[in-house]
Image 1 (cartoon, rainbow, N blue to C red):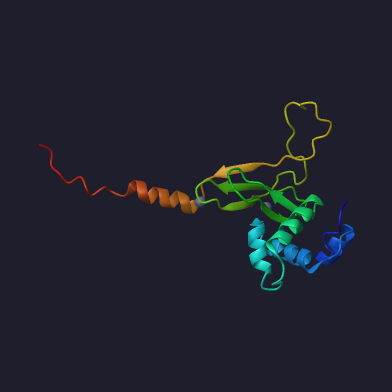
Image 2 (image 1 turned 45 degrees about the vertical axis):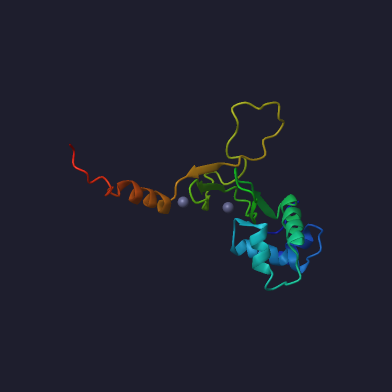
Length: 161
Ligand SMILES: [Zn+2]
Ligand SMILES: [Zn+2]
């Protein structure tokens, strides 16, 4: 089911046949402003506005809205918690620094799914999407690494016998 992406969050939730609860609307608003957040970050971010909302209900909200396509869930290899973002339907991909874990969006060249097709069908009927995760080293981590390795070592001042 598609929602009108220009409609307010409460309307988009209702278009899915769900009640526009304050928790759902606040989570969508938070994730729109803070993409790639974990459920715990969403909880921390909205608990000022909604002090009674529980961690468990935030988990339910992000899982429900991901299952219905309003949020996109990003599962990172080796990371404990999934990240979430509002689903912009632009089929963008992600690039992550393997050192510090920083995650950024990468535009999809084609802009719609599936932008890649597998060499073999593997018996599947329809290819829906290709989720590409680029692994990288960010500029900050590369700079830190270079500073370390080019640091002269001062503890070898013994002269050769
Ligand atoms: Zn990094
Ligand atoms: Zn993203």
